[in-house]
Structures are given as C-alpha cells and as structure tokens.
Image 1 (cartoon, rainbow, N blue to C red):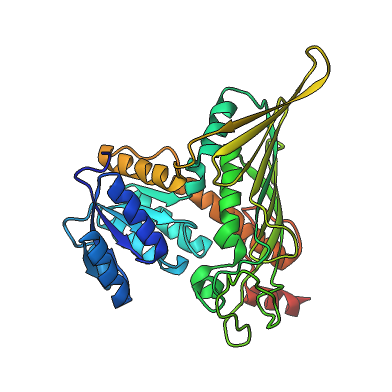
Image 2 (cartoon, rainbow, N blue to C red; image 1 turned 90 degrees about the horizontal axis):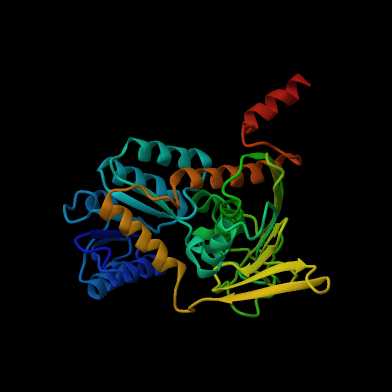
Length: 374
C-alpha cells in the first residue's frame, strides 16, 4: 500500500475530486480533508470518505493531518491553492492544465522551486497502458528516429456545459484547446521527450457555441442556451509545431465540429510507426520488411483494460510523497512547456502568423500605440 501514513486533502469535490479521492483510498492513503464552496458537496464527500471538510483552502493547508493536496478546481483557482499549499511545505498534484494563463503557471512554478514539497501536474494519459507500451518500445529503439506526431482529440458534439466555467475565459483560460487539446498536446511532447520548440502556428475557432440552433444529439451540453450563457472560448483548434531537431506535431482538438470523433494518436519513426487511441489499453505498431517478400508487418499489443492512467498517476504521486524523491514524470517544468505552447497557439491565432515561445505577448495598448505611430 503505497500511500500508508499519507494524509491527502482534495480541493474541489466534484466528479474529478471524487475520482482522485477514490483512487487515493484504494492505494492505501487516507483521505483526511476536502474543500468545496458548495455545502452539499462537502456533506456528500464527508459521508463517503469520513473526512473533514472546509469551505476554503486556507483552512485546509493549516490542517496538520494533511501531507498532500490534490487540486481539481476550475483552472483560474489552481494558482492560489497550489501556491498556498507549496508555501506551507505540502506536496501538490494539480489537475491539468497547470493554470488558466502562462503568467499564472509561471508563478506556480516559482512557488514549487522555493517549496520543500513536490509538485506534479495531472496528465493521466501518460500513464495509460497504450503510452506505457509505446514508451517501452521507443526505449528499445523499435521506432528509430521519431519524426512526426499526429495528435487528435476531437468530439463531433461535446461542449461541456455552455455557461459553466468551461466556457468562461476568465475561469478556464480557453476552450477546447485548454480542456481536451491539452491532453493530446502533452502526450505528443511527451512521446518526443519534450524537444526544443522552434515555431508554433495555430488557428482557434468559435463556431458552434454561440449558435442557438446548434444540434446536440447526445445532450452533452445540457440545457443549451447560447443567448443566455457566456461562451467566449474556442470550440476547435488546428495547430502545427516545429521542433529544433526536425520533429513536427500536428494537433486537432474540438468540442464540436462536423467530422467524426477521434482520439487517434499516431507516431511516425524511421524504423516503425505507432498508433493508439489516447488513454486506451491497445497499441498498434506498423512496420515493413523485405524477408521473403517485401511486406507490411503490423503488431497489435493489448493490456489489462482494468488498469487506468488515473490510478497509476496517483500511485506515482503518492510514491514521490512517501519517498521524498521528486517525480521523473508529470513534472512542473514539463507542464510549463505545455502551457507555453498553448499560449503560443493562442498568440498565433490572434496574430495570424507563426510565433516562437520567446515572442512577447502584445497587449491591446501596445497595438493601439503602434497603430498611432503608423
């Protein structure tokens, strides 16, 4: 039992917070506290996990039974909770993305660098069986030099609650890119071992969420009312990323678009390629050879379907807490790189040109000043 003697507090007691709490409990750690603004959520959580509950995170970080904090709130609140926890010397797992903005993410990273606690970021798809098998084969040089990743996380219709914090840019920091595209982007960078990024080009679109007549056959966006709700975020993004070593990444992410849904992830290498669905337990390896006759050779690998990325991720977090050894994966530096690429995609879309991670974001005031000078 990895988590024995570790007390965990959960901030944000909705579906994601409950999922982490169940995982932590299964791993042997004690869920000792929870935080939520909604009284009903606190009551339910206290009953299910026999945990103390608080209305604010400031109360939780002073609870002496808490050794580690898992943050599952809307993105805007990641920073104050993570920073307060790290300043108190606690260990922190922050759900993706690291923050709602690059500046906020950088402040979390600065707090982590000063803290005696560890900080991990919740990209659970790295721990799925498909990715674990890919990593093993990559490390055995099965694929040769990796050249390109095609990363898709596309829903045909699947906007998460118009009018909720997901569609409010002040709370989320973005739409489909920040919510689900971030999974595909992180996995692509992780597959390539986080290469140096040279250039980013992207286009974000808001096409469906502002339309009152949009079809929603599966009822994903419950009680759709485009006129009454705030919807100022992207519902699709197309991006291309060029790396210093010549590797490239193409990214497609959407909450809603007129194409079939896909979580298809494809990696091209000079010896072989790989294909799997993000978060899945199956991996397909594509090769070709000349033995006997010129031929294609496809290998299908399958793992236990009961193994989840969430469980393995939480186990890695608790292991790091228990040993005091900083994690080798889901690091804050990696999450900060992902946040920088997200920021660059939005800047590219706003400017209509390719950008680098080092390019400064141009404020409205700077644009107005430059226009006057012209």
